[in-house]
Amino acid sequence: MGSPIGRLVRVPFGSSVKIGVVIDVVAASDQPADKLKDAALIDDLPALPADWLALCAFCARYYHYPLGQVTTFALPPLLRRGKKPRIPKAKAPAVLPAPTFATATPDQSAAIETIAQAKGFQPFLLHGVTGSGKTEVYLRAIASVLARGGQALMLVPEIALTPQLEGRVSARFPGAQIVSAHSGVADAARARAFLAAQEGRADIVLGTRLSVFMPMPRLQLIVVDEEHDASFKQQEGLRYSARDVAIFRAKQRDIPIVLGSATPSFESFYHASSARYRRLDLPLRAVAVAMPTVATVDTRKQKLQDGLSAELIEAISERLRRGEQSLIFLNRRGYAPVLACPACGWISHCRRCAANLVLHLADRRLRCHHCGLEMAVPHACPDCGNLDLQPFGRGTQRLEEKLIELFPSARILRIDRDSANSPKKWHELLATIHAGAADILVGTQMLAKGHDFPMLTLVGVVGADAALFAADFRAPERLFSQLMQVGGRSGRAALPGEVLLQTEYPQHPLYRALIEHDYSAFAHAQLAERNVAGFPPFAFQALLRAEAPELVKALAFLTTAVEAAQNLVAAEILIYDPVPMRLARLKNRERAQLLVESRNRPALQNFLAQWMARLYGLKAPRELRWHLDVDPLEF
Ligand SMILES: [Zn+2]
Ligand SMILES: [Zn+2]
Image 1: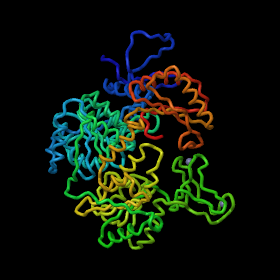
Image 2: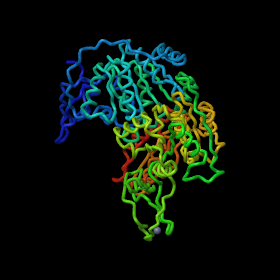
Image 3: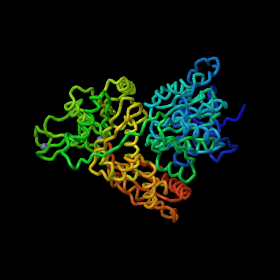
Image 4: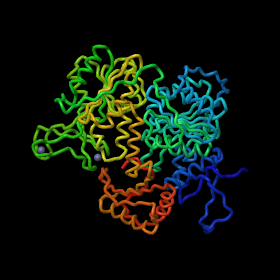
């Protein structure tokens, strides 16, 4: 019998049986003999490989999360229960037909060549403008890995993007076995994909953040597409960044990793400027199309029609005359962000959160976008009985209504999480756009990601100013990236594109950088500001968050946590005061947080390890919950 390390076991636990993973074998235990239990190996499941266990151990250490819970999380649900999926009979090994390739541009060829020559661990940042053909570079890099008998792992941010990508990848590698891993895959299929990857039968694993935990014995390349995307960071439980874990994994396996984006995260861009990563540029679109022209429309000088300027309305009319598509981008769904009573000042508050209920007129509901609470739209003011309640502000539904009024014969399509509330709906909407059966698209950031709309020649941006002055230091980065991505949807085929940005701040450096298509200048300017302010990537952060039915209790716990840190604090560690979170009340729970920061990552990690050991020993009130978020993205 081989070593049991990595094997799944059944262990009696009280009156139930738990599934465990053997992480070590010891000759003696310091526990009394009657506390020890017999563990039974689960026969029909293979041992998890040593590098997979090491990956889990790294996550447990770095995110200060219990190893048992990391391991459980990293396993697909069926295996967590110790069950083996039925494996269909293996197909006869296919003869791999030579894949057909489109002609690569010189920039693509140079990038492919450089990746192919990488020896051992090497992170690449593939910075390519929208339409520059990043996917072609990924696919060729994967092709050379498969030709050497290796496995490739490709991470994408959204489930919605995987079917499209799966189609493209399987068309390119018809003889290869490709498996997908994301939360939308059914339990049995997910377990089968995991085992196919673990046993080396799968050549390519495609998936969202959780696929970074797929065991792959012949792994030779990792690709992280849209590496800047916030969805790579999990916001609950094990708060890991799949991009960062992927980098650890590439280092552990001593293989190259390609991070790709049109608008890299400023962290990755900084690493590429400081030579920790190697930068590969695709500055030109693959098909010879100019970048769209970007211009601002100064909205201080005119009266808008429900948020739309005369210039934008004229530009849409022109597209309608030419039979081309327009996209109006407003990153706020619903009809209006709040319903109010002008007579007494009542506004539609969520009773469970420190937030307003959003008016959704399409189905006449008030809805909290934070906790999901919803109710029918009241006919009269609940406080004073006034019948004339007014919507304030503007969401995509209201914009759609105005566009229908302005362009009654146009085919208008709204695309947001309400209209595209299932993958099926989303694909129907995409098909409608591609068939040219829509003239005007109104939508949120859902439209910004990875789709080619060949007939789209105009992008209008409405209501973006609010994000210019958000308190979060990452807000400008996100806004810039969003606007650059959404602008990049236009003019992809033979038709030149135009982007019109409505703003009251036409001179703002963020908009100036968009007009110049100058990501680098903007990134450098923002990084210089972060360096002065001591924000990431020049500092490393962790947030301790606590929530309780009353704010005082959450704050009191954090104050105790600060006291517990007193004699641990080194000169390099900064602990800030506990403060209520920006959205202080969520689902009837009051939330507060405490920021810990250091310019020295090992010092911070060392501090967190000792501090967490003390925090686990603290007696917290029963209704209080707390967690640590290392490298937080949301404040
Ligand atoms: Zn009222
Ligand atoms: Zn709520």
